[in-house]
Length: 251
Ligand code: PEP
Image (cartoon, rainbow, N blue to C red):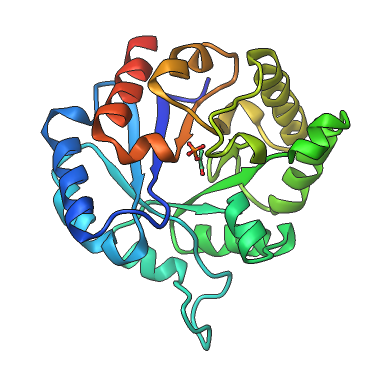
């Protein structure tokens, strides 16, 4: 296992300014970090500075939900990795399935985003995961392995990135794979990383998709699960805090 469990809260396009302040206040006043767990939040870009200021003296890191693959230029509406770094981010999510679907992002583009984020001193969390159709056809492992190979640049060091296994059908659905399926996929991801010359033991592999306080303990017991990327449940300080406490209890 690579260091402490990592619990990441992806707020997506949720929360108005007041809601972002309220949630951050709750996380910094008792419902957030516990010893031995790495915690990061990924607010909408407009609230990054605000949330960054509120968490500054707390043990919570900041991340962006996406970045552009280029450093700067004529890309209306986009945000660069450098801008994320400038406002205090340490992490950036790249290749989330909602970006792949809503914005037609390919693994080729994601690979460029990974490189750019590292160039700007951000740690990318690279999301990969199969669709229900792929799982149903027995092609989950091969689909995820191909996505991983296509999304991770050859020249990366093993400590420079995090992988998040997020089955597309589990995101926001309340359904999760069986624990055996999670274990099998995480083992396969490790194998794929080894095949592309990575020290797989140095890469954190998160699980994401409908993680809640009710299922977190069993998920964290699965071999090679290095933490969770949490969507819906990260919008409730009580739920997110409980998931963090469960991660802490595992150590
Ligand atoms: C996500 O979108 O990264 C995610 C895991 O969402 P949820 O926890 O809501 O399934």
